[in-house]
Length: 436
Image 1 (cartoon, helix red, strand yellow):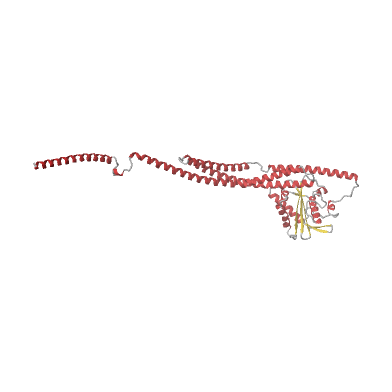
Image 2: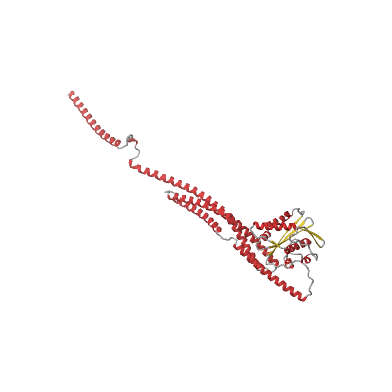
């Protein structure tokens, strides 16, 4: 009985053990099948435990990388566009720098012409020979300044135009590069568009400067107005002088009909206290002495010859016609110098208070236009070289700011007379009379 119980108990233990092992084996089989399927779905060389994300999460990772790449491309395009913008700005500045001297010369020309216009208008209102002559000399000075600016402008334009054209071609090439960058960009397009707009404005400014240079280069005659103003001024001056001459003659006729006639008196006597001055004759190269009152003056004939030669050489260098020297005008210039030395004055007004050009009518000279320039040297011994003394006068007139150079350069005057005298050893005066 006891043995039977032990057998039953052992059988029960075996049955439970069999049931337990049967259940574990089933679960183990399912587990093996799951693991096998998982490993079969992975690439060779990988284990299931290394897969950190499910397969369906991989496409979003590729999209983020693509977006990041486009962002970097956009930034690179923006940097390149900024570099192009800086280069274009530099070249635009270079275009404007090349054009600026020409534009400054154009401004000087316009200012000189404006002053000439104003002076020309004033000439119509003058009421005396003195003011008319002063206005005429002022007009000639302004026209001389306009001609100088016009000549400088004509010389500057070709080089500036060539330089500006070359720079603008380079600017347009850079602008096209900028446009290509914008066309190929996917990111930063708004910023790139703004930069391209700025670049195009820079290009437009360069084109404006170039267009102004081309306009000036195509002008047929920059000094056409200067020529017209000179002709108008000469005409007005001639008309005024004709009016005053007619009035003077009418007054003389009226006076002669009511007063006894006086003995004729030479111009030299009228201006030199009744004593005749010695006047240089054309072709005479010797220095002479002129005694007026109690004062002795040395006539510097060789200096006169040098002034005439140097003045015509100066005009020839400017492409201007040479002046003709006239002996009767030499006498007028000599009278003017001697009367200034006698009276210790240096002026375009004569000792009797009349304007200098009355010396012309006293000598029976009629002219449509006239001018006078003077030079005085004091406190310096008379130079041994006649050409050097003449050069002192010519250089003084060239650098003067009172219109002397404009008179020497004037196309209006065709004839000239020259006087040069010294008083003692330290004062000498030269005088040049011009007429048309």
